[in-house]
Image (cartoon, rainbow, N blue to C red; front, top):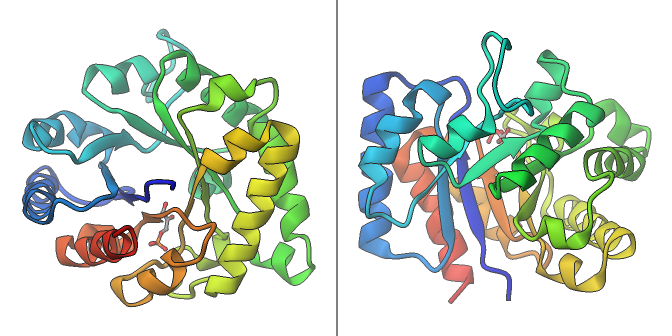
Length: 256
Ligand code: 13P
């Protein structure tokens, strides 16, 4: 059985103080309930190190929200994967729709970032998802295919053992509109089938596919109970520890 994985993407939110407070709350709640799921938080880059100190000794994992594929050099404003590793990250989110939309991350750039993260042995949450226009025009599977083909071009299944895919329909991100459990399940099943035909059945069967887009404690159980939904990548609701833990606990209940 695939172990469920709930990650909080804090995006460009929190302050130095509030990030520490949030991390402390999540770490102590996870210690208290000891859920049978993987839990990660992905704070803004400047707060990674201080959050790592708070998570020391806790099973809560740390992830970066993005990274550049070059190892070092004159790339003003960028963070390398080495730097993420250096401050204790186990995970990195790559290909988030906000990176694609606002910062020019193309499938080709994301592919280089995935390659660099594989080389560093970091876990990767690779995000894919269609915009509303594509869904309305019945192009969801075509868009997912393009993003999967582009982002994962050139790898072997052995290289993708630490890959998680996050299906995040763009129209459901930060909008309060969630994909219905059936819509999520259908996209996740499509992604798993695609991975089986492009790579192999074993990789596809073991691959964890998170859903992201307005996940809240109120809707988490219904979405997470779908057979191909293996976790959640949570934005807004990850900024309040009680809401985030509501989602973690929903995943844990389904894992009993
Ligand atoms: P929301 O949960 O705020 O919709 O964000 C989802 C997301 O983009 C997680 O990466």
